[in-house]
Length: 462
Ligand code: PHE
Image (cartoon, rainbow, N blue to C red):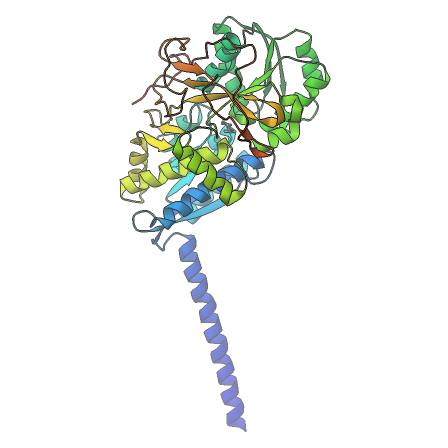
């Protein structure tokens, strides 16, 4: 009896011991994975805004990155390893972006980083990646400061000096605007910088900023600023901000009886823009990274695959992020290593990479020089291509209108072609999906001469 009790106690102790050992072993194994000690995966940290004021930027971007990753993994991965994404939500907050990237380099031990969209958040996180010598590639942050943070920081999109030149010149030359209002988000690096580049280009085209006002992210009432701008009788109003505020600005401007078109940059692009601003946006213009109606077969394949997978038309964020992920994978392959310095060197050598947003060559400043599309928002939220701008040093894509067309260049070194007839079906309706019947309409009141980025503002190629 006694010995049976003893045996039972012994078995119990052993059970506990085995259970404890198992817990310890599992813990050890998972912490190995956590620290990237496994060595059997290529680990990519992705920091994006999946919630907060610009959640749509991050959601679209992660969609694009996941699609590129699944395609690459299905084709065998890179360097014989599968790619593992470590996706983190920075809640649209710059401080949180920095915290996440700190975790990426100290704890998750990622081999490379993709992010962010918003320039302010890329700027906040870049020094951390730089110090750790882990290459960081932003798909869509356009403020010049981002890649100035160090030689491990890259972007696969154009920059705001080039985008600002396209917008300012489009207003001055195509729309014949002389007087403009400017409304910026004063705490947003992207908005402040782009506003400045637009101003310079518009003035160079003979225009004048007659009223300047500002707001802060999260504001919902723009009546004071718009009333003050309206009193100066502007021909156009530049609003280089993000979609959330831009949609409200458009609505309130219409209610105040302002008929001057609004013009902005890539920060407008989101499916949410139309949902917020609606018909009040019709006739406004913004510059962007790509157009879903590009007849290039690679673009239509991407658009169709994306639609099948996610049930919506890919916006510029999804497309630029898809490209950025593929550019990073390509660099890791060429580096033939997952070491930070080796990947960095390979990224710097990226040349003529065929992206869906254009052909990407990384220049000596670690920026891409790429064509820009000017989009006019049409009825029902259709995106009509109003002009295509190919800055100096950029490789034109195969799309009609993207190649230099004689007589279309407004300033030397850059070429742009008017959109009339350039695009068979500019059918991206952010609200309702692509409409094959939509046609590209020439810019209202546009002269046949399309804008051109000035050579001064175009980046040099390596
Ligand atoms: N270019 C913007 C920035 O740097 C971000 C953005 C890119 C927003 C593309 C929308 C589309 O802040």
